[in-house]
Image (cartoon, rainbow, N blue to C red; front, side, top):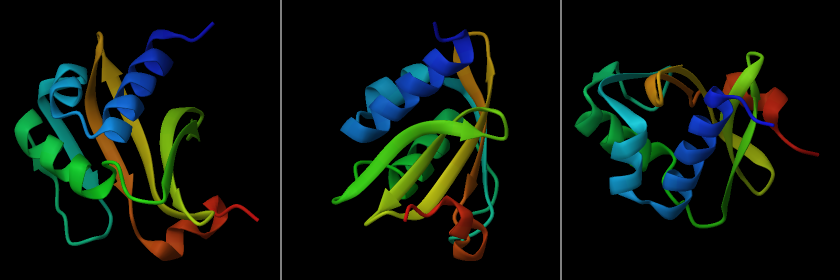
Length: 116
């Protein structure tokens, strides 16, 4: 059985896979925060801006595979294209929504996430 955090992350993944902005808004806190380590993005505050960031970095990429995996010991997301990791996401949930996202985009930090 999945715990609440896992269920929320699975809802997040499904919203991203479908590029479903309404479903993404439903899974994010209104005051959600997302931080990226690369890709030219700084900390983003508020669900509306976080949705734009998530759609830009994770939403329905052609040829991409977005999976729910263990990130820092909790359910998170990994996005791969041709077996190469292009993003890894850790999250903090509060209640039934995502409160905070940390999105790793720096290729040098993602080498351990590539699949052989």
